[in-house]
Length: 453
Image (cartoon, rainbow, N blue to C red; front, side, top):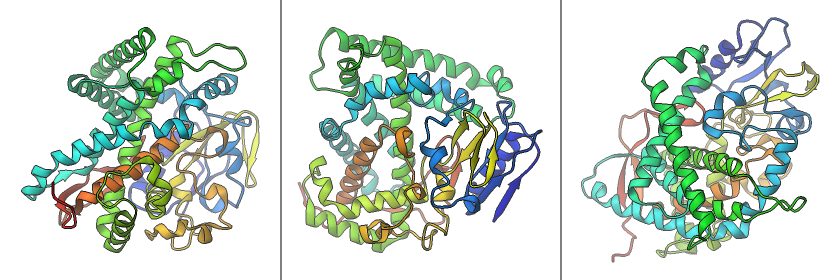
């Protein structure tokens, strides 16, 4: 199916894409420049994907940080992400990225493994009462609560249950408000009307105060165990010897709290949904788990041996990439696959569309983790798959997200088989994150092979 957006306002074009993706179409969208088309922010909009793509045509927009910037759409998510890596460009972005990279070195991330496994174990213990009554739970909600607590502990260290609940309410409030604003044709109206317009600023102030307090604590005394915020505090720029300012660090910490749980939770929820529909994939996962870790808790050091688990995660991210749409703006007049893109136009890039394009993927709608074997991946264009972006602007937290998804997947599968509630319909809801609309109601069934005690 091809949609040619040639007129109308940008919010109409953007919502056409949203609606089509929500209805499950494998949409290929392209646009030719017109002088009267304006985007949400008053800039020309170009929607580029699908049939205009060849092997390398996405490379400049996805990875070309010197040719493309985040542009005006970043302003709509700034309440959530502040002046962080997500929204800034140019030399500021390069300097900030340099400061943050050491905190996300793979060896440092290994130290966060116990936070993931301990937090997950507590959730699984709580599930026992649901399993005992064959009572359904909303897997999206459960994964959201889990990943939120994991990222708070990974970034800021231990928190009390009261702090965790308060942070959760604040994050949810700001996320929902920003999600509304992102897709609204008249965001200034929503800014002044409705209950969320009043709740969100209060929530953001509460979150700011919490983050500042935790960072101040880290400045005064070293935490018992290293966390991402303390690592960032101790990392100077090798060129200048200076680290991030207090305001810069607060912005990055808030961005990590938002981006570090909503996306991972969505991917995990989609993963359990897909496994419930494909029992042969679940059996293969169980076989690998028994062979590699048995009944003991997995560790980050086990992940290289869990190859099928990794492929399963990659396939979930192919079919349902949480960041399903991203925006770039060329700094000067540019060309993509023969289409002229004027400077400052908004180019919308959709991993969801590209990941389902038959030019790059055999049977693209099929759930098939083994398409990520070395043999079947050979020759696939690099930019056919970008759930975390590609190139210099790839998500800095992708390593942590992949480690977390694999460890959670293994731990849940060791103890439970999640079965979809009969008759329920699960469909995508493409907002800031591609989440299952109305959640994923599932019943946890204890695995018979689980050892007692």
